Length: 236
Image (cartoon, rainbow, N blue to C red):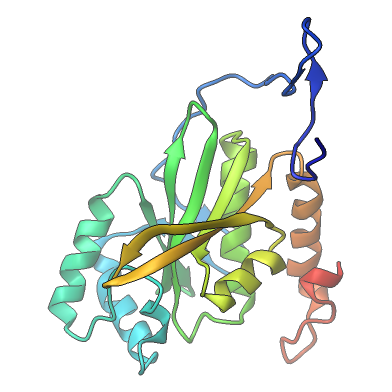
C-alpha cells in the first residue's frame, strides 16, 4: 500500500512493515514561560497587562471578522475582555503568547495540545489585529514559535488545525510550509455551529529546509525601502 504521507518504514523480523525507530530522548520538555525575541516582534507570555493594548488593537477590526473562527469573541466590553485575557494568561495548555511590536501587544497566539511523550504540539488561538496583518512580524512570530518547538524543545511534529471553511487560515498554513493531511468531519462544534477540522503539520525532518527559507525571507535585504517583499516566501 502506497501512501505519500507515510514518513518511512522498515520490515520487522516477521517481514511486516513498521515505522522507523525514534531516536530522540522522550519525553521532551514542555514549553517554558519565557519570552522570545525576534527582529520584528517579541513574544511574551500573555498577561493581564496586555489586555488594554490588545483591546485597542482589535477594535480596529470593526466587524469582528478576526474572531469568526475562534470559540470566543468578538469582545466589545473592555472589562469582559480583560477578564478573558486574565483567564487565558493562567492557562498552561494552551500557553498563550502576546505578540508585541515596538513594545505594544497587537495579537496573540498559543502553543496547545502539548504532548511531551509524543513530542508533538500545535499552534492555535491565533488572532492578529489589523495592525499586525500582512507585516513581517506576522510571519516572524510563526517562525519564532516553530523554532522554539523544534530547535529549543526538540519536538517531532508541529501541528496547525483550523475550521475547514476558514480559507485564510488554510492559505496561511500552505504559505508557511505546512502539509495538509486531511479533514476530520464534524470534529467539534463552537458558537452553535458544526466544525469540520482541517489538519496540517510540519515534521522535524522538514524544519531545517523551512528554517532556511524563513531566514532568507525575513532578512532585511528581502525588503525594499517601502517595506515590500522582493521575493515571496513561497518562491524561496
